[in-house]
Image 1 (cartoon, helix red, strand yellow):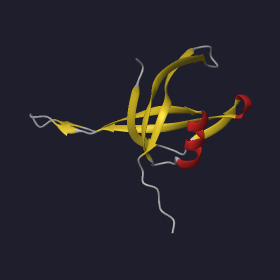
Image 2 (cartoon, one colour; image 1 turned 90 degrees about the horizontal axis):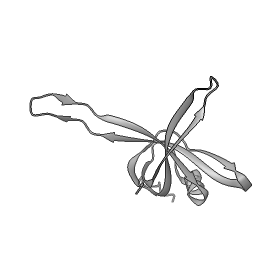
Image 3 (tube, helix red, strand yellow; image 1 turned 60 degrees about the vertical axis):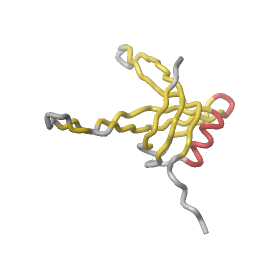
Image 4 (tube, rainbow, N blue to C red; image 1 turned 135 degrees about the vertical axis):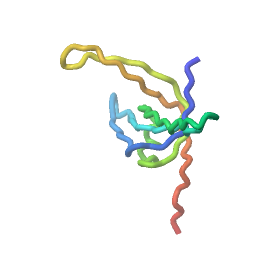
Length: 113
């Protein structure tokens, strides 16, 4: 089973582009933080932040384009996707993405009156 669940904050406004026959694809950066703690011997373990590249397709990309902004808190369910490419020097580069299947907006929306 390939399943990922993340809660984190969007690092910058999502990038949305349109591919094959106008299908939207959104890319966003999500920061998740593991809180620091103190060991019994007094040693401080600092916070640790991980950055995730999240890809959304089709309807989910449209939702991201309309409603997701830098700083928003999101819950994301998806799967890990590994890929590679050859850079300009011909060296193989590897990267990891989260392909989102579901997103929940956790940041309350401002109400307009």
